Image (tube, rainbow, N blue to C red):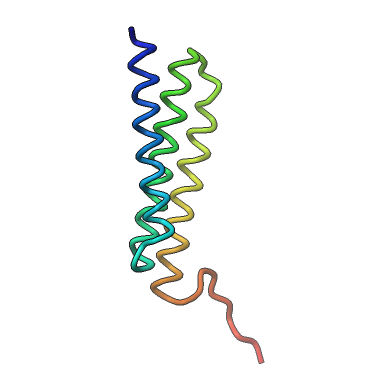
Length: 94
């Protein structure tokens, strides 16, 4: 019974990921694309967590942590790029 619920939730999560990818590609502004990228990271974390429960394996916890860290860094980098025009500021030496 619980396996059917987990598979159903994975299917709904895949539909959510597809809608997020559409917003990521079609987004009217860069801010919408950044928000969609952050949402995609959250959906991927949820998908890996559900898949881990479905397989009854704790080996995917590191993958969840890695996706979370990369999603956070990506969101911060894009936000800095929109705010300042560059991600890493370098000093000009003459």
